[in-house]
Image (cartoon, rainbow, N blue to C red):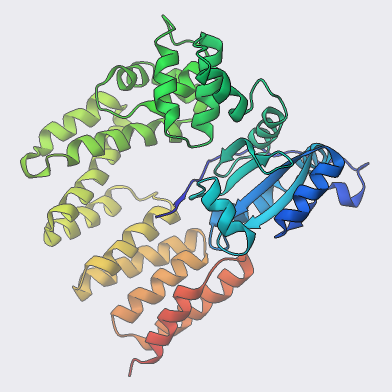
Length: 391
């Protein structure tokens, strides 16, 4: 299964009016690997590869929000030969295999022979993507060079830190080991880089890294945002609780959430876990009840949260009365923000209820919205074909 990584940022940048039109965005060579290597050899540059797939949402976000930025365009056009390559067709298939690319978007930095120098992973806002490019041209931060120094036996704290960060930001598994090795060289984890490494490698409930994140949440949230910190903690708690679901005591689970998060967060996180708990147990009646109570208890849920809950009902629930509840949630989701996701969900719910007219209406609307957004709508088209078969 390919993994899509998605980072969250609200950074924006102003462009330079003095730039020429061709400098306003990254100038890509498209789908021609050999040409990019030849140009790199002539110009003495590194090849930057935007390793994408046609179905990857974050890849499209990079196209729309980052590659078009004037600062990014100016820097990448000056320092790299830029190549956009679909990893599932043409030259991309062999390159994906060679460099073990299975997560998108991936960003590869190659020398003129095609050897990997550096890499990055996932949607990156302008500031971080600019930093990635700067590190790719600096031998002191290139992943390939750091690996060579590490293999030579250098275990200095500075080297371990740079190597760990490069590995972790590239999504490499070795990053956790090197990160732990680096943290052992420090008496106190005080630098922002230290906190990033801790947050990246923490995996186990109540291990020293977990306890540090819990005890100093304010520092981690300050540097990386509440969503990233709480998201990591909730995933770790859920993995811990799911290990022995048959013997799980919900009161003990509630205590874990209460001891980890402030009350304003602990309660909704726990209530959300209860929904998943009953779902995993196959207790459909309690699952439905828990979900209904959750929506009622938290009236300010986002469009995506409402849509997610409604879609889960579509996939799991057969009771028409409960499906009608999901219809209401989806309509509320659409009233907050109408997009192809929630319109598709509403079409699916109406289809399951056997209501051909409204199902057709919202499926067609979902397809139009998807086209406008440049998103894939193949599944909605398949749904529409099934809807058309209804009497």
